[in-house]
Length: 306
Ligand code: ATP
Image (cartoon, rainbow, N blue to C red; front, side, top):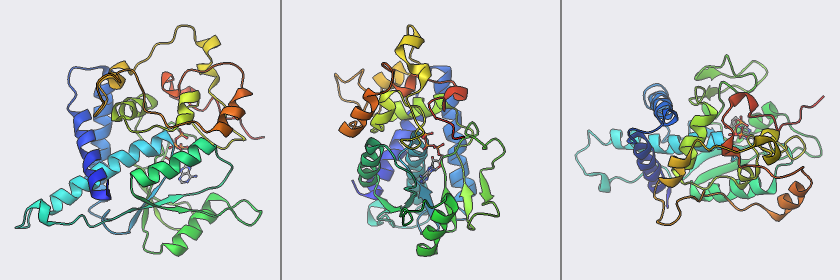
């Protein structure tokens, strides 16, 4: 699929989720969350910075939150494109989609799981990302602000960057949907239209989407940092959970475009051998990340640095 086709696909996927009726409270809440995110993009953001130019970049690391936001962003760009054609006299098929790839920035800061690296590479192709990968400094770790500064130097047309942060993330409680960077950061606008999403909304939409989900989440991870600071979430250890209940059975069984006979399968990416060997060392077996819906426990697998 080219960028126009995957954008249209994400537009249809989002509409399909919004059309679900008479389902769980989680789905109803997630539909509200999607409507608000769409409003931010289509009414507040796109009229100021066109997503069809290079003014907006997307920050992407293959994590579940930025993947959800990317699916919604692509769908909204398609809707914006359709809206822009309303006053023209020719049919849509005579208009070429103006973008071939999506400006995207990945700060390759610390040693990440090989599964995650593979996932970033495969989804970059699937979503037609023009992925800028920041270089690790020569021997010295670049800070996030330094890495973004380098990005902006080589992408000087960038005015704003879309970020998949949520209120429940650390230090995020007071953030705003659109805000300038802090004084010690390079100057750009942070676009944060996912702030109001809860963990259960993320899983409900992502599992319904039937898009590939990074395999590391299938191994009991719920939020992924570097290899050095992330373990499977202890609250998903099968010895601790007792009889697990899954909130998203309906989403998995009725996932978008799912083929017959695949009802219980979740579309996770392959876990790399390197990570499988690494995980042999962690204690016991873990349920997949989507069994955890308590926002306050999402980062329980992260090891705090002293
Ligand atoms: P998870 O919490 O499961 O790891 P996530 O990576 O999407 O999912 P966070 O880790 O909370 O979410 O990060 C918030 C957002 O910040 C991401 O969605 C992404 O937009 C941005 N971000 C985080 N790390 C990076 C990175 N290394 N490069 C580019 N953007 C990043």
